[in-house]
Image (tube, rainbow, N blue to C red; front, top):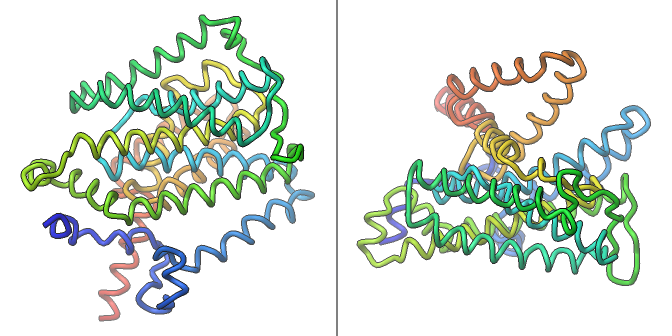
Amino acid sequence: MADELVVDRDLTAVEMPLDIDAEVAPKGAARRWLGGLHPAYLLLIPVLAVVPWATAQVFPFGVSLATSILILSVFTMSLDLLLGYAGLPSFGHAAFLGLGAYATAILSVRLGISNLGIALLAAIGMASVGSLVLGLLALRTSGVYFLMLTLAFAQMLSAVAEKWTPVTGGTNGLPGVKSPELFGGIVVPRGIPYYWLTLVIAVICFYLMYRLIHSPFGRTLIGIHQNEARMRAIGYNTRLYKLGSFWIAGVFASIAGVMYTFFNQFISPDDIGFATSGTAVLMVLLGGEATLIGPILGTTAYVLLQNFLSSMFTGRWQLIMGALFVIFVLFVRGGILGIWTRVQTRRKRGSA
């Protein structure tokens, strides 16, 4: 019965903006060991690994820009698990990024521990506690009350970061975060080595989220999003599934927080406030929700557009960018990926 609720939504088609599944997708073992993920995605990995390095002489800020895009993509993909798949819009998702970020900064600056594995474990532990506590409270509500609770939680954590000066550095933040160490004492310096590390983390996160979405758990989340009353009627504990999605999204957001802090070597309360959460929601909507590719496209477009406008129109770039987003949200349904989907649909109809 649960499968019947989601059979009308072909997530495989949505996840592949390059619509080649029906034409050239290999069958058999090649697809099975990838968990159904199209092998064409693997071709992007060497491209992403080489391009920033190859263009470093021409575009010196390219590596830094690409690293930011990868980190924010992990963050927005985690938000899309809530917004697009579970139907839980959150204005407090930056809180989980902040928990991971401050865990990393405190370990490095206060305790002198910059090991990546330890930082990830600490971040995941803190995010797990925070997401479960917030989830248990927020899931008792819905609609605007849910939004307000998530927003209040993020603002509360931001206030704690501002006031707990001996630990968090207060409004000055925590500068001086050292470069991450791998097990064995290998230090990953800034620049291309850190970009490659971030790429590896981002690819792993993408793959894990892809497998999750296409698992029975993910299909059940989609069914709850589409018709929670029916899913509850046939025996699903919908609140438990939504709490699970809240926890998973918080964990992935905290991983983004770890990479964010090691990249910037600094964290402050401003990085975990409403502006960060609101921007992430815009990125997801810009690219297209209920996909994993959509948040990546939206993040890429946002970061590139922000850098272009801020360099061309220093005093008015925020006004121009805001107007562009209003027009885009009003008139472009489904985001960037929605445009591609409609073009592909019309092409198929024309050739039929």
